[in-house]
Length: 85
Image (tube, rainbow, N blue to C red):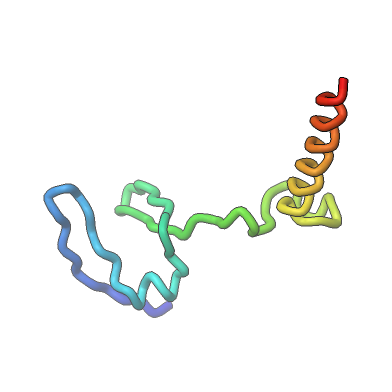
């Protein structure tokens, strides 16, 4: 396992800049998950909503985004029916 080290500054507000090459390599974008361990801080990329993961993965033949869109369409149909009453 190849380990790269960089020293970064920390501002008075506690902000540190992660070098661009490390952000790109680990796909860090606008948010990151930081875990406080006994050995230090662990920084991980956050999953995106379109990423399929978890215990329900594979249960449906559609992605979560598609299921949500279908549910919203059904809700709109029900709302229109209620407006007619």
